[in-house]
Amino acid sequence: GFGRYTYGIFSDADTSLCRAVWCTVVHTRPEAVVETGVAHGVTSRVVLEALNQNDRGHLWSVDLPYPFDHRLHVQTGAAVTDECRPRWSYLEGTSKQRLPRLVADVGQAGVFIHDSLHTAANVVFEMEQAARAMTPGGVMLVDDIKTHEGFATFTRKHPEYATIICPSGDKIGMFGIAIKAAGD
Image (cartoon, rainbow, N blue to C red):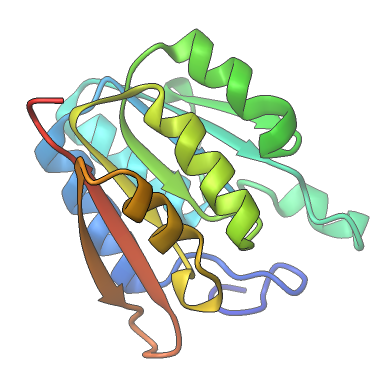
């Protein structure tokens, strides 16, 4: 399945977020993209196809497979094709466990995508971690910001990020885009 609630109680990215991700990766041409949350890997595949079109870059994805139905574990990343996999590193675990080390190892990231646990505390944590590696002009895309204040909390604390709030394609949710100032 694809869409809302097709990966246990979770959803894959909708078309609006996928379009924003595609455009961001194609036009910014990042060397490194970091994402949290994979589910079926729809966003991962969009990123990877954009990186392939650019003929550059690598995606690191952090995700904890759906904990309440182990049958879904084989579906994690299922949308990622074999031809996309050379540019992809999948790290199983929570962002609390994996993201600090990953950000340190990657060093600089041009794009960060949050689509994991949608709580204010987790979103702020992930955005703060990503900000440590965000290049000038780097872009953070954060899904499902309508259900908590995490995105707003981060952007109030970090005025060096210009923000855009976008409706999801289904008009139910919203996602946010934060762009780091080119001079910072």
